[in-house]
Image (cartoon, rainbow, N blue to C red; front, side, top):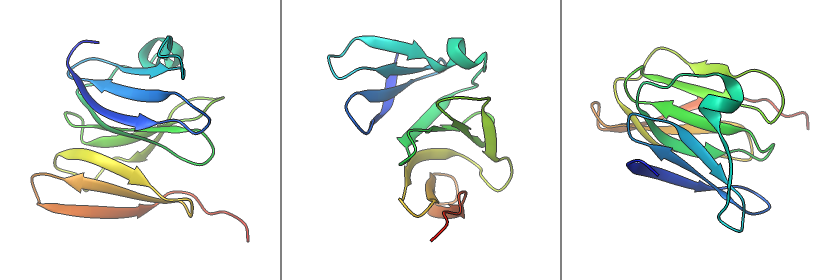
Length: 120
């Protein structure tokens, strides 16, 4: 790893790690590298920070430099979930009800976004 920053567990085993000014890597439960998000999706990060994994297994990544949050589904193209309103996104968490919590270190707060609506 090159400057590991944030880590999150993946449901079913494994974990995701963001690297400073680099990439986001996904590891299996035996600690072997499964993939790099840059390679798998052809996505270029500015400075990936907080990472989390939702109940669908999609990986969410906050990009500190670009002030965005992207969702990387298991299948399909990345989706930009947040492109405005963040000044310096850092740590993140997501709930089973589709809420995304993002710590904004410049504004000293946690911002909450609804990104997924699940049918009852």
